[in-house]
Amino acid sequence: MLDRSFTIADLKAAYAAGIRPPAVIRETFRRIEAAGDPGIFICLVDESDALAAAEALGDPDPARPLWGIPFAVKDNIDVVGLPTTAACPDYAYTPARSAAVVERLVAAGAIPIGKTNLDQFATGLVGVRTPYPAPRNAIDAGLVPGGSSSGSAVAVALGVVPFALGTDTAGSGRVPAALNNIIGLKPTRGALSARGVVPACRSLDCVSVFAGAAADAWAVYAVAAGYDPEDAWSRPMSPGAPTVPPVVRLGIPNATSLKLDSDLAAAAFEAARAALPDFGTAVKPVDLAPFYAVAALLYEGAWVAERYAAIRSFIETRPEALHPVTRQIIGSATRLSAADCFDGIYRLAELTRAAAPLWKNIDVLAVPTIPDVCTLEDVAADPIGANSRLGVYTNFVNLLDLCAIAVPGPWRGDGRPSGLTLIAPAGRDGLLAAMAARIHAAAGVTVGAFGAPVPPPPATAGTHPPGTIPLAVVGAHLSGMPLNGELTRRGATFVRTAATAPEYRLYALAGGPPKRPGLVRVAEGGASIALEIWALAPDAIGSFVASIPEPLGIGTLRLRDGSTVQGFLCEAAATADACDITHLGGWRAYVAAGD
Image (cartoon, rainbow, N blue to C red; front, side, top):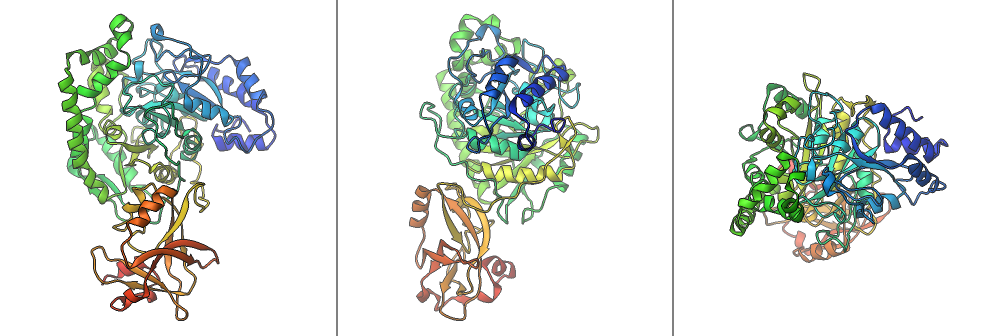
């Protein structure tokens, strides 16, 4: 079974069939040798040590969801006992403790294999700013591998490991995914601890996940995410669940703000749009001008100074140890004043406010991950300019506290990779992962460079995540409706569609906008009314319920399947001047029918 693709699902199937973790580790090292690319790894775990770790796992353990799964780690993330170089040999140190995310993955049964190459100090999107041999692009050796997480992306694309950790400040977890035809999950800032990560811009840095399939990336994220009191930038956040509600308002760049550098790139984006699954509503054009203005800040003022601060003592004492381009970029911070930095912070606040209204009209933004492919010749001719162009659609995401996932799209006309990035407000990682699984399956591509089929989107269980409270909504809080943002801004996760028992009547209440429904339980003459169930954390439920105006309230609803759930109900007295719309079966049908 180990001749199949190296997805987490494949390995779990192999284990269920009787294969043991040491066999998987031996196969992993065989694949590393077969890849024949000395640029992927900076440092490998000794094979005997990896085999010993595999043996020590014992019998399969359902409580360890990544039991026996090998993985690679970008070499700016600490793994105990292995040197961390950040692609700068003179900077190297050997940590006594692994990074928080590595600790969580190992506790879940995963086995680290080695440290992967990167653009030095995670400064770059091309993947070749390294004193070591640069990794070769897994799809086309003439292309850059993408950076800064180059080795991690290539390792996954070649099927050497099922997943790898990267980091993402300006796009380092998404650009390499696009250039190597794999998934790149860039989580909400602070959802994964950055303790034990060599910082680039500490206020923006995210640990990212590369995988061949969205379900694998999510499986890793669900384990790795968690509040870390030792990381000042960590924040408590439930991983939620990878589900897609019936309606997702999807936006794409309008014609005037779409930046693509070739006809082939433009054709690939159109093909990706045409292959999009139906998410319940028409795609909306969006002006990206405010986002581009934010992106321009990343290599100016405050955030260049932050990169300098991250390695200040090293760059001031050993400047000759840095890659020439890395030194040029980070060293430019010495020309900045504290006032320049504050100017950038103030400008970001203004632009954040200007960009915020966009999210009232869409739930998810889909953009090309990169404006075009980038060749090794392009970088040789213009090292900084070629790199900058790759970040057009990525640089603004962390500055605006958004989450994102890069997903492969249909192949370009020249056989090179392309793809989309889905972007949403913080905390909506599960929605993006579930949408990415559908988009990937519809794209007509294979996984990475090894030709394995893209797995079908996983079925969702329809149960609310642990630690959350289910809540039924029947009207303006439904997905795609005007008040759904009151749920999603509180981190709500869509669970499933359902319907009430046939003992309710539905009314369109007077007043608005927005118009609101009133659901009333009756002794006779009732009907079954369509609804959606969402799940919120207990503290979010409290603030949500407090915001509900009379005559609406929360009570116990009986569902058609015999179960009960808390949900919206209306005082019967409020229906005196309301319109009875029970015959339509639900609020969505009423809105579709018009007044």
